[in-house]
Length: 138
Image 1: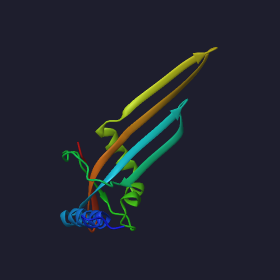
Image 2: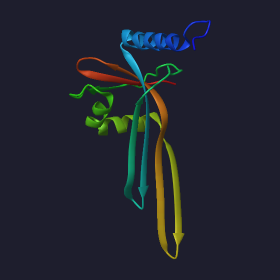
Image 3: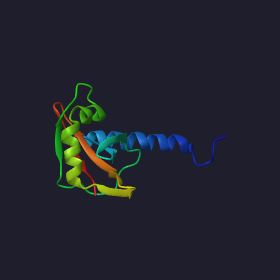
């Protein structure tokens, strides 16, 4: 049934398309990136990198800490980060990560678990023909 004030789903669709077009006009997109690294007893146990397109515009201003990565053949930010993973991981370590450490000694046996986490952070990504410029928003 149609409401008297127009079609709200059509209005939302038009607004979403307009916002998407404006972000492409400015030449950048926003992505949410998180990273988690778990070490148990000096052995890498788990590592995960999550990248997703931001559904809503992120609040904040770009910082001066940027990284330029050579663009991958697939032109996607995830494939670009995976091809340059070591450089990107060093970059997010410089941004600051949360560290959680648990150590326990039981009957002369020491076990430890260390978790490094980059909380979900919004990044502005500018992609041109040869590189991707990634900047965190704060």
